Image (tube, rainbow, N blue to C red):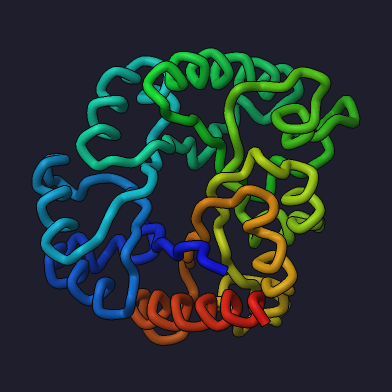
Length: 255
């Protein structure tokens, strides 16, 4: 199995803020060749691109706000052309959208933006947390409105395994249901504690192997390591462990 592994740079946000170049060098030394951007840390896009090139890293997507997707799409296209990525991701949803009409309005807005982005060979993706799987006041579910409604919207999914599992839903079921619409897959694990917080990939209770086994056949292009917090030692160490354990799962898939 040849699916590439990327790192969502939100994992090492503090380290990047302290020493961007040294941190990127460290990430590359772990074996990473791909990253997912989450801001530029007070640098220009050209500066970040130069640093990535220096250490043999390539950006495969970026997380941006809804305003950038809806109002600044030409600038997003320019950035995508500079870095060479083709996915723009909305990573979080404001409270005002977390109701039936809000999700439907969001779907319409993202659909329109995705149609425009498609002209530049870009995709717009939506990254979930757990609240999208909550039952709403009319009995509906936000994630179903976005991705399993009668309307086939043009945007795609960056499915976050941890958050779907945290909500009590099955990420593997969703991966199969959305086959062909999940180019980016966030691989994260859950600690076996009452809080059900984050832990390093392979050290938790989510059956990630079963998800990795199905990823390529479902059209996933990149497996993305991310850990928001609760690192055992440090974010960098978490990134290293995540890469190594996920690599082992990929090897196991080919056996």
